[in-house]
Length: 591
Image (cartoon, rainbow, N blue to C red; front, side, top):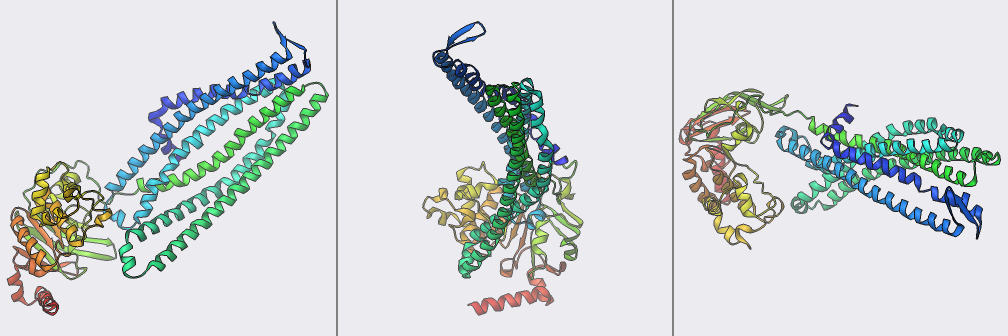
């Protein structure tokens, strides 16, 4: 029930439009009931009068031929008006459903955007995409095939039954004897439909996730010759989806057959009793024809209600998957009373910070260090030491499990996330580009930047020269995830993006990892001059690029084990010296 209440909430803004739709529904139901009156009138009056006979109807008198023409015209007019009303009502109904779908999709996608990396780290992006694109459509099903169908069926049922009672109350009663077996049939199949629909949607989500994963990673698939493996895995997922779909189809077919059988029994009973009434002269042949038409009109919404029940079960399965996202806890919540952070001076401090992605596997253990405004501080250490994780705590990609991260003496959790991140420029280890032009990607952090400012940032990142050589320069499309650019080109665009933002804090995570040594030297020269304007935290394995920065913190097993300048750390002959010697030997071997 709570699920249905939440769904109704999305339709409250459109109550006026829904009421208008109901009025059209009532008028349309009346016209649908009138469709069969000309047929009954022809049977009881025109055919009885015979060829050349006359019909006296109240104060009117006309020939049988004229009566047939009037009946034919009446049918055309009634069907035309009923069709126009149905079109109008369907349009209004579909528009309301689409508006609710737009609202839900917008809310769902927005929430996914703001959910922290903790959430996305544990999910396949294809599954989240499926919920936004497909599961969300269940809210439209709730209205168009749920509420709208139920109300329409009830109105048709009531009005049809009233007409039937006015003709023959006993027959009308017999026509309702199918209600108990029909309800039992619906109840029996509804739970099965929901379970099988949930299973099918999960399988379909897995198919989309597998296809998305395989296609976005097509280069590594080709590089390792794993095309057959990817196809095999996709076929496995597709077969599971096929099996789930087939099971649901069989259930739907059997349930439809069961409903049809119940309907047939009801119609047979009505026909038998009606025949007795005709022989007793309680009904005319024309009235029998009209009554049977009404029985069909009565049973059609009853049958529709059974399908509606199963459609709602399927929609409920989809909405449960949507609400799973909307009910997901924000592990990095906006603090109540958080205030916008002004432009920072750039002082950063970590106070006894501990962090773990999983409680049993701690990544950071009691980290305490300070970065003064304008300083450049490097974080180095072996793979898995916690360098990138520590960097990610500054913009609140994650929150520490213990301790505090401070900027200018204030806990970062006391500031709004938007204002906090406005003070930080980030260059990630894997530079991600969005579909669009080079210009749009550089300006992503500052969309209102002028073309001249974008070019200055590109020049600072040593990117301007290669951009000019692209087919359309800055207006060249980079392709999905920057597929049309080399790794080094993407990284330089990432640097340009950070420079253009001009935030007081600069976080660099392996900023030159995809560059050759010559380009790295050029960019590091630019970086060193630019870093003097910012407080910079840099993570790198290339120790030669940070050997002379203001301070180096060496991490091992989630702890700071050494701190100092590069030359000073070498004299201690500790972890940094070991890493330095290993890097020097690697460079010597490579040369």
